Image (cartoon, one colour):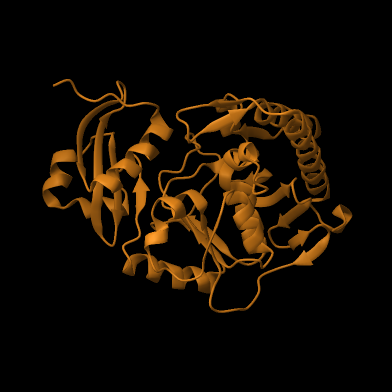
Length: 345
């Protein structure tokens, strides 16, 4: 597209330029060789390229839009963003694992949220030189060409490659196509290359904002697995559960399929205000009322695994459920909180 064709011309121009510049930086790092570190576990890699790309993008956005808030996965968070109506939400490398292992399935993700809603997104795949740009109410472009949903059935269901490798391969959900970056999944859905996606594990605002804008710009939707909307620029940037999104009719079909197969989602920090609280049953609801560290994996209306954690000490007070589901739940909790301590004795 030509940025002058939209009322968001300055924002679209800046997002596209910075996504491409960050992508060029990532290609240079790949050519030079990477040193990989880890945040909370081996499943959570980070590189110098993540940090440099983040600094490049935030510096560019800060210079172009000094009144806007900024949120990036690789920068220290600041409560100042909570006072801003417009917030840029950035993941300099969505799919760092793929980036570090030679897969082309990673991207730069730059989203703009206004009053809590994703309105503009730029997703750039450096390995394939694909730039997806979406503006809610105006449309989606891929490398300058207008794109959108395709009318087809059976649906193409874009799923997490790690979730597929760990457990989805055991299920007969039709149309599954595993891949890495969630932002790139959403971009490809908006461009008509897939139809719908979901996750079992929680995601963060920087994973989703740009892709959400792209899907919404194409006429689709993205929401939490319990049906509630995603609001951006929250005090805690991590969503507490998995997501589902894509073409509206495909989302409706997929929700039925997921429930029928009891395909789970994690819910972090479960409280009585959440729809999933009801899956605990009366006795557990009474026993855990008011506890701030209730973590559950549930599917098909029943609990599959439960962790109760003293969050200040990161001490496990209770655990239970199927061993495989408990292992997946523990991985999600560790990613959110850091390593957990088992009780002595």
